[in-house]
Image 1 (cartoon, chains in turn purple, green):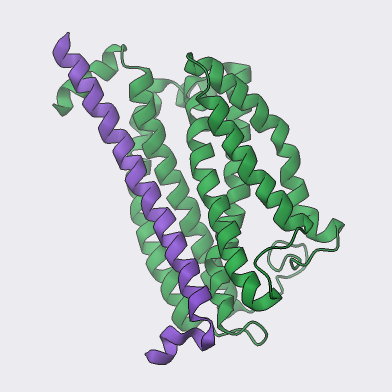
Image 2 (cartoon, helix red, strand yellow):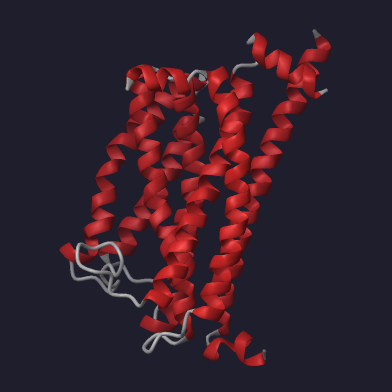
Length: 50
Length: 246
């Protein structure tokens, strides 16, 4: 297990790569959801007003 | 062709048919990522030259492929938006730019993190790296133009023109490793000859590549559907959808 995380001495490069890609992918999903929620909330406001 | 574009690009129909696709593509993405990551770490062997750093390839190459694929989708939407004035295509340009910029950033960052231990440097101004960086700036330009006008349709038109002109950069990226002497290695998978990669590495790479593609498509549907609601907020079918949700 320890050997697996060590990545043959390249742990920093391999795990940082995967961490950054994971972060960007998750951020994209969160951003897309937030966009959708925000738009729907705005439109519900608009509907209530009229 | 025109009939097809008009049918699937009509706002109301697009909103309907893309819903199922968005959901199923998300499910497929999760499944493929699970299989792909397992294979990348536990099935694929370390490379005889690169050692364990070869595992960076399983995210670097799919991200780099996507950076170009998304660009082509964006430029194609640009053509559709300019020629047929399809609203959905105008929206897709902007959403592609955001997602494409993310993939380009992923490709650049993972490439740098691989370059340091293997080449001895994070960055070198060779043709492949430089043209990929130009791609990132093209995406930023499209995002900026798309939102720079009070009228979103004018913004989409300006962004479409930049996206179409920028297509020139795609073959430059693709063939940069052949036209110039680059530090970046040549292609191992996409060449006419047999891929020069062992099957135990090729399979996880292709699974990850498909996962990235379904990830992109699912998010593209999600973002464009939301944007479409906002742009069409005065249409009666949108009002009905909003009413049902509250």
